Image 1 (cartoon, rainbow, N blue to C red):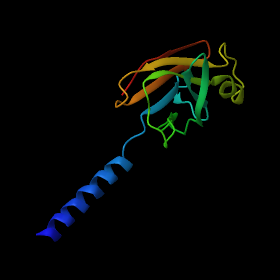
Image 2 (image 1 turned 180 degrees about the vertical axis):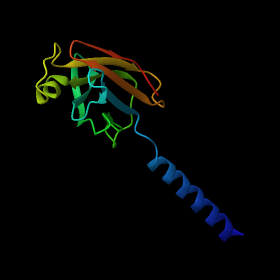
Image 3 (image 1 turned 90 degrees about the vertical axis):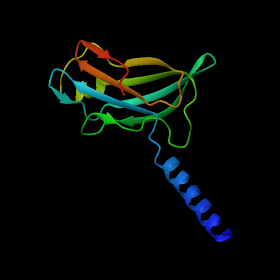
Image 4 (image 1 turned 90 degrees about the horizontal axis):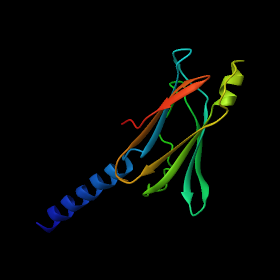
Length: 136
């Protein structure tokens, strides 16, 4: 009986560890180029957190072929409640294709208050305008 309890406890611990390891990253982004109708691949993105009177960089990345960064929050940290900013560096993206744009960088500031939730920030992009929202 003692051996069965040990096995059950070991299985429960292994399941909990596996679930924790498989937990999704709390922050993702997606950039769509409305002019071309395609995902915006290769857009450099920076994540910052407002600490005191300054913004502190947490991570950087570039959108993949689907225009996504599926895990922008640092994998070794738990997301805390607070003010965050994602900066999409689109000037370089448009320059790569020889297209003019009004915006060189698009900062998107947001508040994270329910830290257990996933935050998905899509950016619908055109050379002279953009739209964003909180997705899932």
